[in-house]
Image (spheres, rainbow, N blue to C red):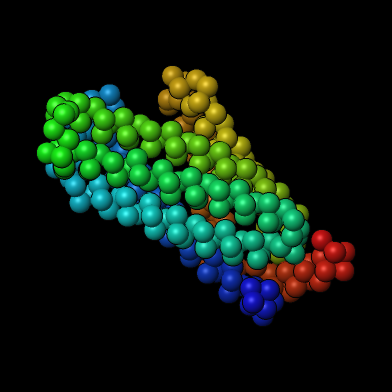
Length: 245
């Protein structure tokens, strides 16, 4: 069914993919902003106070992450269809990495929501004092950060693979390929730097983190505004069918 849809309207598929990509970028951008604005590094009491004072913002950040994950699952499926003519196996390989990252990210959201359970329902945890509950809430958010970094390893490999596929395509600007491969490398560098040398993960890596945002926004906008070259997409799909790729 997806093959029939893509064959009849690859440009439409590309634009739907771009719109979902935009939803994902906006949702996760808000989720990151909401969480970072409420979390005070190494100050459990201040973090707890901010969360309870802005509970709606905190919950909206959680919902935004859920929406972002759902949108990215759609992006993964549609990019698989769009890049399948370049290499079905590599496109499927990339999709598995993305879905694994989405699954890890989704499971990790438990750590995002845990502070509200600990702080709002303190009366259910009578064995623990307020300061202990606040410390556990901050620890949950730190664990969320680690889980996020783990998921970004999988998204890093995903960007590397789709970047390679785009660079080999004839229906998308090939310059987007190296940019996405740079984005994937940036995700991997950022995650593994945090795992191996967390004290180094400061402003020194701010430039490294710019690459993913620029590359993914450019791909998103291209898909929305231009889509793909439908004629070339169909030509590459036909060539792939003949070659059995």
